[in-house]
Image (cartoon, rainbow, N blue to C red; front, side):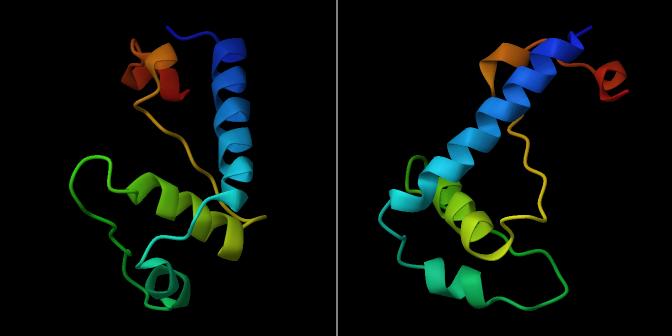
Length: 87
């Protein structure tokens, strides 16, 4: 079971990381992601290390700054995260 204090730290660290992405060079498809108004999911895909996460963070900062929730489950600090931890 993951401790709540660890989860709070991870969430705060990830939020800080998103807020710091303001100064990163926009990706080629950034305008497309920013202008999307559809009702379906907007999928960002590409090869490893091509800037998918960076583009997502830029879209969040530009369009959803105060109305989003982001959690990166690849964070090594929560490697033992289980279904029970959602509670």
